[in-house]
Length: 471
Ligand SMILES: Nc1ncnc2c1ncn2[C@@H]1O[C@H](COP(=O)(O)OP(=O)(O)OP(=O)(O)O)[C@@H](O)[C@H]1O
Ligand SMILES: [Mg+2]
Image (cartoon, rainbow, N blue to C red):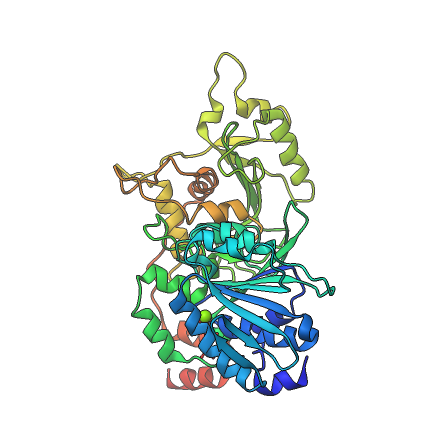
């Protein structure tokens, strides 16, 4: 890394350092407000300019002029120290070595057209989520080329919650919800999502977080603080959080009971989910927690809510193949409608003939007359045990459950139910799983011994010894 630039601006440890060094063509740096995104793109340009000198040609865009001025002001502070000169009209920075960066705002999508035919080695889009549609950004992508052989790239930043929330999420987050993994586009280009948190920015303290809390709905503030793209206002499951409920895949003990849940679909997607039940032997997974460790979602690629129209036999074979390495014998719970016999063997029986066994799930969606409701079971598990530990965890590879569960909305006519016009197949499958293992949160009595145990488990041994003596 350039010694000159470093004396003026140094990336912070963690995501910011990864961002400035990332060689992937299209990088989305996103998530939390105040995570250091603006500084990261400005720093990245300084390093790029230093390396490619007069061949480095950059374009920095934002949606509105006011927003752009904010970035330009910060650019002035950093680049002045590197000897840069500035012009206001056009808004541009010239580095002493000849590298230049133009600042532009695209208030209307058509504004992107004036850049057609230009050549840039870097295009930066600040707050991509403020663009209601990706169309202008895709137009700018066509300007990335270099006659001098400079490796070109697009760098974007964004927070959850803007008018472009959905397309940003679909393009950068949904394929690998925890980020840090390359997404291969059908056109052969690569992109990646690098998540950022406020906690990654040492320059902002608790007072900033407090101010943020005062500035939006609880859901939106949580989205901003955690950089959580799953947050949707009016969500049926506001309890769901990427931070709490999604974990990176890991190996689970062979002796944990396993089962699968299945929601049938043909013209619409089917959802098969595989679960392991924690016995408490892994410290950070509560006893009784359901861990969804695999997903098979029968959706036509890139077409949400469109099914694969596979036969029951083909799905059964696919399930068996996926279970080849699972320990023990797998049984499942499935949509009771699959057991209906319409003049021929039921779908469940056809799958059973291929050794894929299901029993009908309890399909009660909402509670009534002393019976529990499936959505309450899902909600209860998301809310967690008496210590607040989640009782439902999803591997980050279960991308379609992660995409569709937090997107569910209330039914207008029956607010206690989900709007069933939505893509609810994976949540239905998860609901069958939860109903097969009912969870009741017990009101826990905390004793001094419990407190001591917990402190000891956190290795605060001296505190623990103190409290033991006092007790
Ligand atoms: N590497 C760094 N060196 C010095 N200051 C930094 C660095 N990274 C971030 N900061 C400072 O932290 C503060 C917040 O960073 P920044 O504005 O880049 O965050 P952001 O993610 O763009 O925030 P927002 O979501 O509000 O746009 C700024 O005052 C910025 O100058
Ligand atoms: Mg910013």
